View 1 (spheres, rainbow, N blue to C red):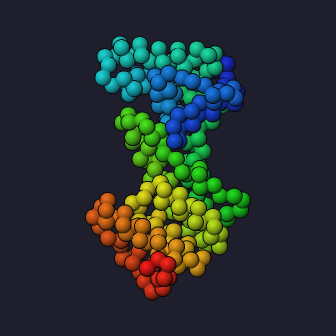
View 2 (cartoon, helix red, strand yellow; view 1 turned 180 degrees about the horizontal axis):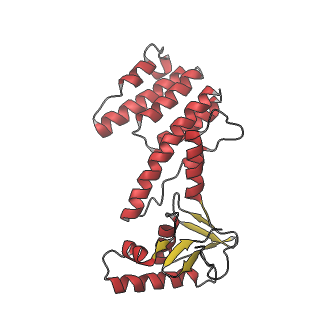
Length: 245
């Protein structure tokens, strides 16, 4: 059954969930109370209509059922009191209005293209699309789980994109992507190896050695381990410039 619109459609509405919460409705930033932010974000993270009971129980775990439903009604009122309907409400179900653009969904689509596309890389590559964490200052269990799922997806996508860019000879773009992966997870050795490989392909031995040493220091200080055999083999035989000895 197709959801019925409940109120005015949100013209030009965009929801940002990466690197923090921001809502643009009708072309201007909308300021919402935290209860309305949590409701909108929770529904936006699900690509299907949700039962009110599920939403209320998930967002207000520690409240009795009646109180949880009351909190949901209050959050809906606060979310829609400006007259713009960001959620479609029909019967016992809620869903995000189809016209609301969510940056997380755009980033996921880009990541999946990077993972599954061929070597055709026409056009610009924008690593910043995969540079942000999902709602980094929120600690609800449902956010933490989704954050980790997206983090793994974007890191795999950045690794794959870097490899494809190197094969295409687009070394500057490959370096941007590899550095974005390192920034996303400084303890992920595969991302450091990608940076080293790009520097070596570019003939920048000093930069490759610096990146290797940064990786080695982080792994030793944070995890108490040394770089892998793959990393050691990558820099074996590289002549160390005097400036980095």
